[in-house]
Image (tube, rainbow over all chains, first blue to last red; front, side, top):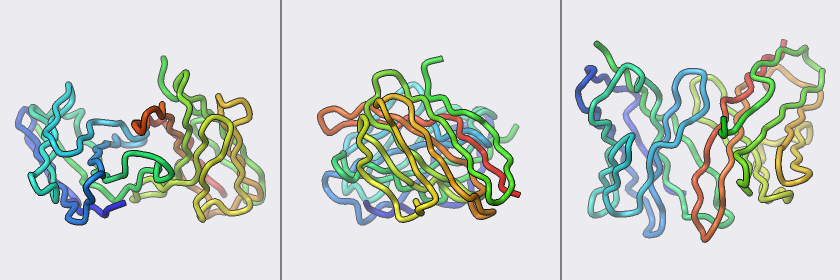
Length: 112
Length: 115
């Protein structure tokens, strides 16, 4: 699976949009971009995933650049409960390479 | 609650003792994964099952570790002769694998402390 690069930490004011970047310059054509987050002392929580088109769900939006070498996770109106470590993961659709390979993620701190 | 559940949530043991953790996946999920997470790091893959079959094991899974999923439902992870380096959060995830698509959903984890 392709490697990802994320900033180690970011701050965001409550109510503002949080934009979390991820670089995955070695991504291959059939690899998906997944985002998970982990609130302190809890298990990772699935947020969203995409292949090449932008995706939106009730939690967030995922913007993938046209060359697919980077992506941005957008939390449109961050709240204090969004404070967590956010992981960007690139993986093949499935088959034998089913495991998720986590990096160290971005620690997002949402402040008043 | 229809999410992944793990028991116990916390375990303190003495070095050399055996411990066993249990994971109950989301109903009808055919894949079950185990990960380990140490402080400040992201989760690391240990092993996974599709139904009863254990399909992959990481080299992190030493011979002191064994995992089972006897009826394709719940799974257990046993660590024999625990060492202080085994102290970590042990995470379970499940997914419905179908038509090359799957999304893994994680449980709350079992935090192990080996004294």
